[in-house]
Structure formats: C-alpha cells, structure tokens
Image 1 (cartoon, helix red, strand yellow):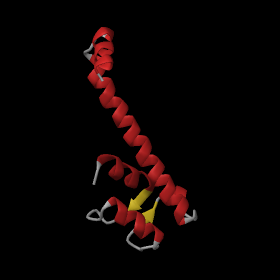
Image 2 (tube, one colour):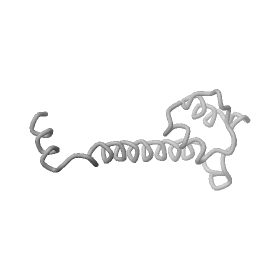
Image 3 (cartoon, rainbow, N blue to C red):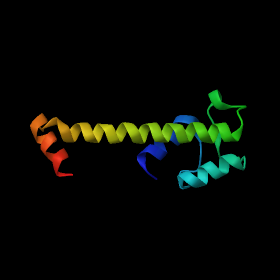
Image 4 (cartoon, rainbow, N blue to C red):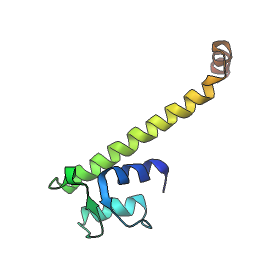
Amino acid sequence: MRHAERFALNQWLFEHPEDATYDEVLKMIHQEDERVTVWEKLEGYPNDVIVDTIEDTKLAVEHMLDNLLFGVALRNKTEEESREEGAME
C-alpha cells in the first residue's frame, strides 16, 4: 500500500485489516464489512460519502507529497538553473 493510501485510511478508519489493499478496504466499506470501523466523525454517513472522503484525503496527500518533493528538488537550484531546465523540456 502506498503512503498516501495508508494515511487516508488511517485518517478516517478506526479499524481495518492491515493486510488488505487500499481498494479492498474501500470495497469492504461499500459492503459494510464488519472488519472495517469508521471514526466517530463519519458514523452514520452513507458509504459513498465515506469512500469519497477517503479518496479526497488520499489525493490531497499525494498532491502535498508531490509538491514537497518538487520543493526539495528546487531547494538547491538557482532560478537560472530552473529556467534552463524548463527550456530543455
């Protein structure tokens, strides 16, 4: 499981099978599998909303990690070096 997927599941779920894939856990939510327990904040919400919330969290974390990696890559470069690389693409 990717880091963003694990983070998103752990952010909204109290309990889920650790050996299941991200997609399997989302399927378990849709099937109301008893091995998956949502945090109190999401109790009572429709399963589609819970899955959408988890997906939105995963996408936000992926975006943040991409920006972080891009920022780290730029940290040691001058603006001139960045412009030159952009011209090469």
